[in-house]
Image 1 (cartoon, rainbow, N blue to C red):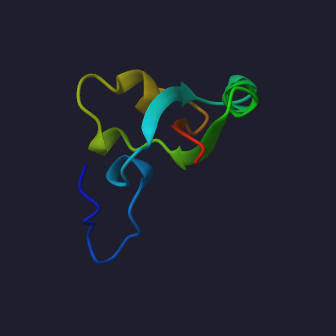
Image 2: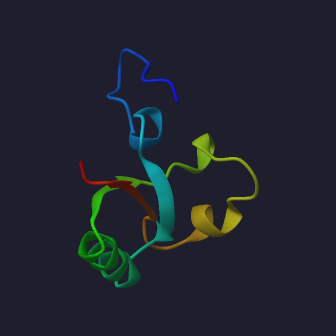
Length: 77
């Protein structure tokens, strides 16, 4: 994956090598997923879900009354 980003924003996890998206959603499941992945030895990172940067249908996410988040994980080094 590329680590290059637009000059007006910091790189997001998918642009940083080693991060993999594992979950898109909101609370309370988001916290449960974070805890699970941390317990089995993964580093976690949560970022806002941006439907404009996603492929495929994102209507459900756009219509959600609560903001969706993406959980990224990578093995701890």
